[in-house]
Length: 99
Image (cartoon, rainbow, N blue to C red; front, side, top):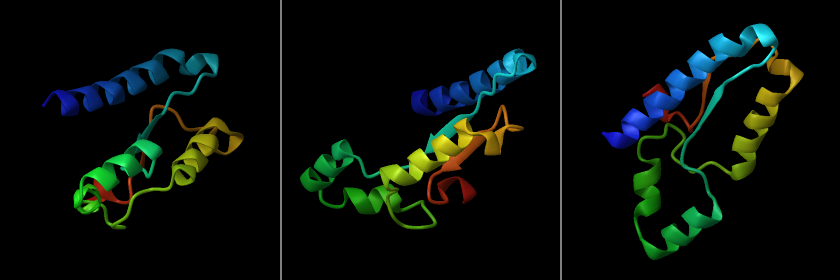
């Protein structure tokens, strides 16, 4: 429950900040990254057999994200292509939030 509450708090803060600062040209969005193949995750995967299967079980794509896949979305959010986007939650989660 605390983890879920914290995630909802981030989304609420994102929306509130977008509404508060939007008239100043400041955009606020939340990047919701799913399980990502980082060094920390790689270490955990080596130590705990079966962890990867559990981590991707809910993902439609059935794999971990490459860090560059998440980074590309973050760069896109910072660029002019997303200039009319604020207060959004952008999932980069292999489809976990779709099911």
